[in-house]
Image 1: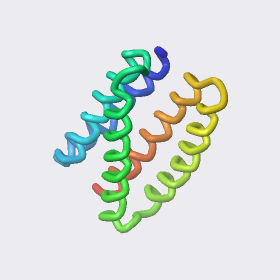
Image 2: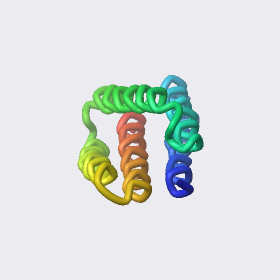
Image 3: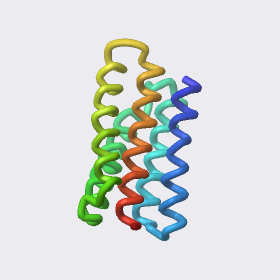
Length: 123
């Protein structure tokens, strides 16, 4: 469980980027995603499941919106797509074996996607 919490805290990086660049709507979505995921993981994944899913979906939609606003800027969009493929792979693996490790790798892939979308938007 500790690894999932540590990798969840990596979302502080995209949060800091959005705060630095004054993209407060994006900051709020990332911040709420962090809080909901931490609640879910800290309660042994028995509470807050739907809250975590809702904010994860909202973050995905927000990432798509900001990468769209960036006109799918190279290389950030392409890096986001590669990380998206990796995220699906780790999500699928987490369903079948070594949940803690694979779910943590899924967190890292989503962090890379989010950072890539932010960088595409600000450049």
